[in-house]
Image (tube, rainbow, N blue to C red; front, top):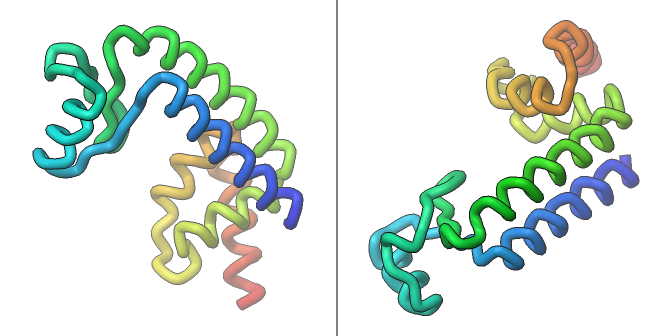
Length: 130
């Protein structure tokens, strides 16, 4: 599992580097948005709203989206290679065995390439071992 955690940390660092490279920023209030765009010398018309409260300068968007898709594909293949360990990680990360809600974990695991049946098998094993 240590190697899996190191891989996840590496993936987070790669995403942060990519976001920094293309000027992505997050703003969760009007004040944050105004401060960030002023700091960067941008106007509303210069920005796209993107993922989870993030914004990207329009001039960088195409390059960012292309590189981000490639990065996610590579990361998904790497995470899938961890098999059941990665499934267990996501189920635990989303507290699925406590809430019995697999929705968020399933969404992420399907994006990586796992089938629902694979996830349910590991989920049931986790429940049995509690």
